[in-house]
Length: 421
Image (cartoon, rainbow, N blue to C red; front, top):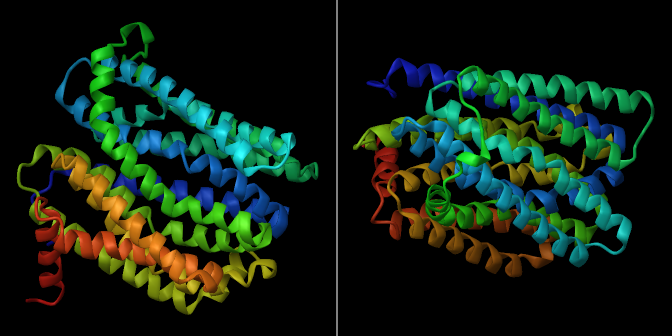
């Protein structure tokens, strides 16, 4: 049995966390499909470019903080102080994010109208400075609260989308406003649950030393998070700038289906954080998780490869059918990218911060080299370069260059179990 000797709390939390991820990704994917069909490839490609520029930076502020905050919340009683200090830190980081976004807007866009729309995307993420509060519920094995918050946000979001479609409104500013309200609904629901637990965020409780400690420990994962985020959104910016909005829309249709394959590893990683921090020896759990990720991802990839045209036609329609050619190559990234998500959680537990950065830099270097090699293959070349980058991180680096971590041993044990060695 793969996950023996794991507490009922973990199993229950995992089920809720997986349900939350399935629910969130399914409804987010459905909203993107509805918007893509309503906009058509050209306008959807323009929307994707604006969204990708903002997403290149902002999620990094989340990926580095949440694991560190979960770890601290599990160790102390004064949770309000930690969360309030984290909130103050997020305000500061959001200011940095908007400053960077202003610079990118002037660099990438041609006129003031385009710059204005890009900055509106940045403002749409403002409510998510409170999203680190999800760490509170993860630390208590209460992922069911996250699922309820996701349900609240999507009820509102879909109502807004259908209202705009009913009025035949296609201006991007209205859809950006919906995105802002969608994020606001999510964090507001979490804040209500926290208040019911007696947890109140108060910036007056901010401890500068505590905030500085959280930030210092999270720096390597900010860097690693940015580099990993680079693999998701930099290709979209590159395609949008060089091949136009229609080609970008086709690539994004493929990307959305690939992104669904990350549900399981993301849920596993988040749910495993508490138990990884509690157990001194988690090698058995790690190797079994790698094996589960590999088998599950492989089955998904094989299915999508053979039915790529039917899937694109069903979800996005005839206008996006050419995206199936991208999807047949793109989908195989899921296997290695899924392992990478879980590897980050392990390296956080083992405090291998510098190794996490070096691993991501190594992957970025290999990806860049192959971008030059495959330049004549255009978009297919970009996808193959991403695949090469993930192979370099999850196979070459972890097996041959990561002797300090238990990741190497866990992956080798997973291979032995797979082939009954």
